[in-house]
Length: 222
Image 1 (cartoon, rainbow, N blue to C red):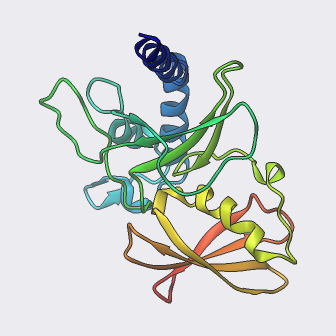
Image 2 (image 1 turned 180 degrees about the vertical axis):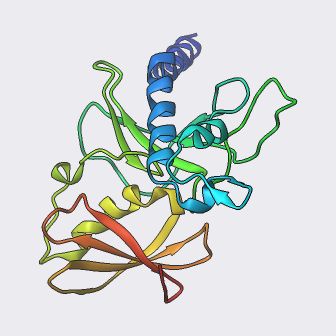
């Protein structure tokens, strides 16, 4: 009897914890808008349709049309984080976001559009505080939050960046991080990407660790 009661309590606590980690509609809209605005802001000319031999480079209308499917919604699937890496800020839990990249205008559920200016555009990672509602945008093609301050990063100990990079580079499904070198620009790391099925070299700015970028894939400069 006591064992059954204990199991019931564990189940209820687990269920309540899942409920507490649910992303609200307001937060979901904020995340969606972040993704849309980032894609419009960083689109390349090839993402803009060509009409009569003229590319409408100065217009965002067509980008809005592409980014916002027919019903005005992006399909976003929130899932518990199952990747490598631990977020050190107390009160926040990690949530992954999957965004399918196909269009189905005949369906009641629309999807986002794959844009040429972005790679690894399906997976995103956020940290969410259920009590305050604060969202930290960690990895993916959206405007990201500064989070380096929450990690104990030491340029004299390159391995101290591994956990940070596992989260920052979540959208490429990172694995097997290796430190390469440092120079006046910053620190260089090689990360095996399970999305690209190749090594990606990332550079972390020595003046601001929140500034990082991929500079080559498989030895080919980006």
